[in-house]
Image (tube, rainbow, N blue to C red; front, side, top):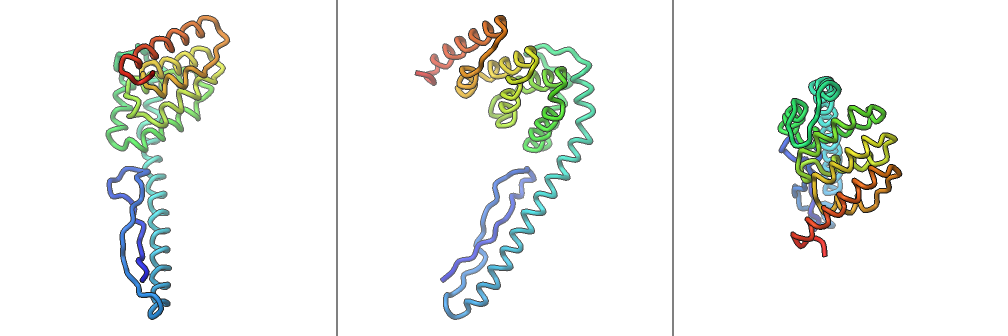
Amino acid sequence: MVELYKITTAQSGIANDAPTTRKVAVVQRGEGTEEGVRIAGEILDIAASDISLENSLNRQRMDRFRAEFSAKLLKLLREQDFEYGVDTPADELVRKSFSENISIAKEWLNQLFVENYDDQTVLMGILRVLSHFEYQEVAPQGPTMALAALSNVSAEVRECGIRAFENWSTLESLEVLKNVKCEEEWLNDYLQQVIAELKEELEKHVIVG
């Protein structure tokens, strides 16, 4: 007896939700096997169609995010002054994008970061905004951007990457920072201070031995 399953996409509207499976038929081996093979082929076709549809929907969502948010955010990042711990219009705009579709929003920010990797002002602004969120909210794209910032030619961008990990204050942040090398004395002093403080804080919560 063969149980046949159909892959179905999530109905939440959130991109990248894991597909699920649903049993659609039970076919007896031997007698009726050709019919079972036919049904299985149809199911595979439907599954491929569902995945293609979800990919198309994701592209449409991304295009809408870029059209609605990109120009506005870039303008805000280039014009406003940032202060750690203080919300800005850029924070509010990113928070709005998260409320609409957090998976697409994080991927959109990641694309914006990559596209503007040579623009120090934009990178620093994105990192400062992301540092105001919890680690779990922005992972995995947020930490990936902060990690990429640690290799930027600008010491100021690298400082923002360190500060983002400092603000998230997680064990993952500590492990990343322990492997960072800074040529600038002032930046290395800051890095070592952050590592020491993070380790002390995490040890208090019995996260680090």
